[in-house]
Amino acid sequence: MLPQKPQGVTTMRSIHTDLSIFLRLNLKTSPLAIKFQFFLPEGIDPLPADRCLSLCEMMIEAQKTGKPFYFSREQTETCVGKILLGMQEMEPFAESGQIGEKLRVFQEARANYALYQYVPRFEKNVVRYLVFSLLEQLAFEPDLLILAADATQAEIIMRSMTYSTGELYNSTTTPVMGCAWIFIYPFKSGKVNFLVPEMIHGMKARELFSKDTILISIPYRWIPIMAQNLREMTWHLPAHRSRELYLSEFKAIIKELAEKS
Image 1 (spheres, rainbow, N blue to C red):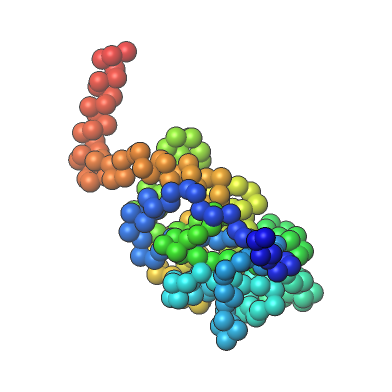
Image 2: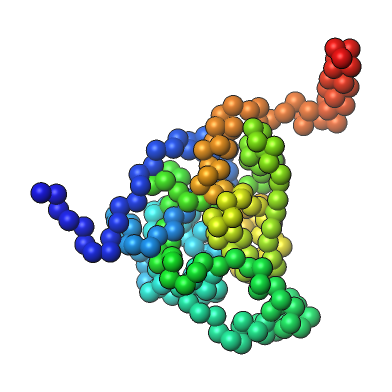
């Protein structure tokens, strides 16, 4: 008989999708895979107890350690991560918008309170464990793939979404609780989302990313589509080399099509 797993432990579905194309982007930091779990993930160590971090800082921690880890509701989180993940209730003074006014992000608490209706959160106790893994060590099918890119790299990544689908680019975020739009929103909405960390209060203040960084979060249903498109499409378009090349290419295309039609 096969040995039984301890109660409440689960084996995550092993990786079947070839994601190696994302490594060829040569991003400053490795693509980060995320998995939301109800049961304890087998074979993954917890975030060390002495690492008291915010949810956004855990993205940086994954880059520093290079090893997969999970975060759970039993561990300490220094910002609003547990609230967004449905692991903890929000304090009434925070829910009322008092913090945003004190931080001078908002004119009055009412503005901060009004904003909370838009911030995505998981339902209570739906997510008990959050797993982080760099792409190089990835052993499971990810729920999200988070990429930190510069503007040139971001153009290629986002174009791989629309290349075969015609999908619109959309950036949705708020000046606070920015991690909700990288972790929760793409998973629940199924939409690729991107944002500029410099525009998010906590990410900017914690100095987590270089000033030219664009964060792109790809939910699981889009990952294979974008991977395939990256393999197929031209990354560096000739017209992007110079204004003159763009104008000459565009003029030639218009002339050719006009003559054919």
